Image 1 (cartoon, rainbow, N blue to C red):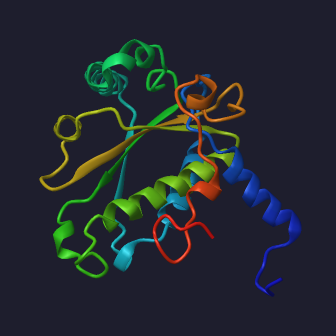
Image 2 (image 1 turned 30 degrees about the horizontal axis):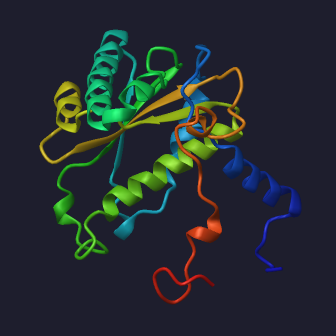
Length: 216
């Protein structure tokens, strides 16, 4: 065991948060105290980022009318996604894909503008800005779970339409609508598994050794 390791109790808590994090769609209203929201956003802000570019921008949506407009953008994309799914269209339309009107807080996570100026770590992999923002979102997700709050990542929207709605500058891009707040209970397994939409694959199918497709 490394001298830098956490205590057994601390390690167990970290692994529990990872295992019990869920993409939540069902919320019970309520509120998130300002100091708690600040703590969660600070956790997000401590995420790693390529070249320390910190590409994340979080927009807190406090206007209920604006929240409704965001929900309508999501609903429009939900219908288009259903059409694209073909034979699974009806099945998809029975799934609950967002909790925008039910959750305590809505945050839009976006990539900043002028990202092309940041070359360190992105010359050959420009999408590392998106990876960095995703790390910030995961930090927020895990911190929320530790605090007993649910969070859901909604990606069903047309990015430019949402950018226009929120007044994002040219080059900035929304990546996620985040629903955050109290929940009655956390799903015992991912919701899409419980709904029969998909099954998670075991880790041993996704780990290779030396070359693609070669099992250890």
